[in-house]
Image 1 (cartoon, rainbow, N blue to C red):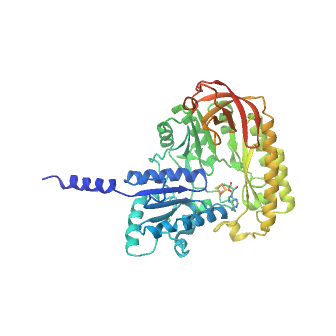
Image 2 (cartoon, rainbow, N blue to C red; image 1 turned 180 degrees about the horizontal axis):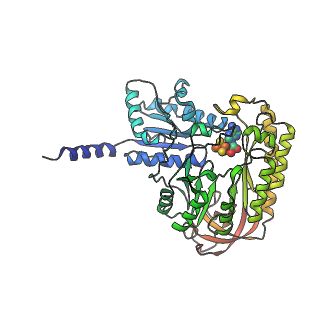
Image 3 (spheres, rainbow, N blue to C red; image 1 turned 90 degrees about the vertical axis):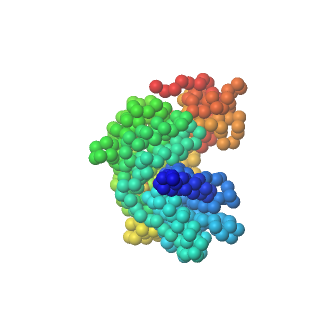
Length: 467
Ligand code: 5AD
Ligand code: SF4
């Protein structure tokens, strides 16, 4: 007679091995992309198989974003376009994950869209159970299920999602946000801030196969804190010491409490890239006050001055919103003026859209007409594009070390990579050079031309690993 427990395990393993195929789509930020990696690893551990084909999948998952109205529209459109699969195969299950699921939860089920379950960002460990319950619910024609708990401790520490593109990878170091900027839904969809253990971060980076560069992710990396006194710069130092990763980047810090130790570390460490994404949001101090950003125009500008005094060639980028509540033409001119004074290399620009639960939605009037928001946005984009093009023109003839990430998007005879300051460089593959030999390596490239988004150059030498 065989042991009952052994038989049970065998049966369990068999059930696992025959579980269905899932198709997972990710919308929104890098953090969501990383979370999609977490979801995939949780499901694969339970015997589900990933597939790129929606037709082939029994489980369709959308990992959604809720930062702006546009993100909602995209997801609604996508679910509508998947509805025919449900009509074709009544066993197909559709689940909505991520920030939009957290924000809308059960509301989704009355939208008329074919959705079986919703799960917020802190509930992914329970996804296998949720999928099983959703299946049996469907058979009994019951309505959808929601898991919307916001955790104070979940960091998915031991999971290794391996979100690798070419030779670069994202690694989440913290989750949630405690800043409560008045326009932002993130604290309500991703919950309170919590930092991940430094040991698991180092372990994850060390375990990434063939990765030369990591980008450390957090809503506000400045407030990374482990056991009360281990801060973000301590974490970067630890990663530099304990791993042989060639380059480290991060996103995003908050301008209100930028630690000087981090700048000093960045200035002296070659493997710590000189690139800072520093969300401005608005150049007007009165708008910044209403946004609850915790800094003024002058403080932002002095921070930029401090950064440049330590690293003159740092790459600076930003996030900027037009048309926030009460923004006057004068406020907007302040934003244009800061953009001109700072000279960002790039910027992500948005028009304000009111989000549920935020303090702006509760206490401020969304009073800038949509057409004004849009006109200001277009003007801002135009100014920034001019600035980016000008900055790129200035580096013509200069030589940069570029970490090669793979083929360029447009051509298989060109390679692409990034400079230390984060600029994208495209260069033709030299005769006799194999793409696979260059990917993940540092090469010297001389810049010969540019657009507002990209530098173009020619390869000089293949460099050695940074030590
Ligand atoms: N409307 C427009 N843009 C927003 N962002 C965040 N919330 C909103 C909103 N309600 C922008 C901010 C943030 C970036 C990720 O998205 O600029 O830094
Ligand atoms: Fe949103 Fe502000 Fe937190 Fe960034 S820092 S995620 S803008 S609340």
